[in-house]
Amino acid sequence: MKVIIQRVTKATVTVGEETVSSIGRGLCVLLGISSEDTQKDADYMARKILNLRVFEDDSGKAWSKSVMDRDFEVLCVSQFTLQCILKGNKPDFHSAMPAELAQPFYNSILENMRSSYKPELIKDGQFGAKMQVNIQNDGPVTIELMSPSGPTDIRQLTKQEKQQQRKEKTRSKGPSESGREKAARHSRQDTNASSGAEGDVSSERES
Image (cartoon, rainbow, N blue to C red; front, top):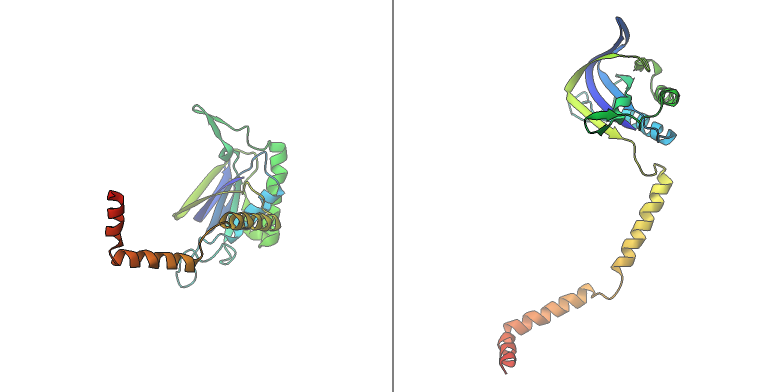
């Protein structure tokens, strides 16, 4: 899944002459759903959108508060064109999830966000309609997110990290000098050099 998140002072969605949704300060989120996306991708994105720290705190410190921290609104818009693959100069959207599957998938993301936050602050456009999206970007701040291609299960990630650590330890083992041995060897070399050993070596080479 590919998502474009914009920090906004206001955003509206209209279909024809009708205003479908509008928000004040908060986030406008464009979601591009891939045919390979799973529920893990949906859960990941819902969590990231709500917890992304792109707002300042009360003292003006930037990048310290999320939309939930500030009680701001979120406007989500389904945007299959984010899954565009160019063939020459022609956009191809075959990697996007088909509409009949994408709509319930998209709705599940909205429900996830509403159950995790204040449902009245999560707005959306009109799925499948030709929309006019008016975004007043604040900053501008625009962030692109991709759902992880690898496993998102923390237990699996921990297992992979442990396996990698074992591999690194195995590679580091083997015949190697200890710190004391290295220090002693360097000390002997320094002593030989200061006693004129280099002259002895050059004499041996000449003979």
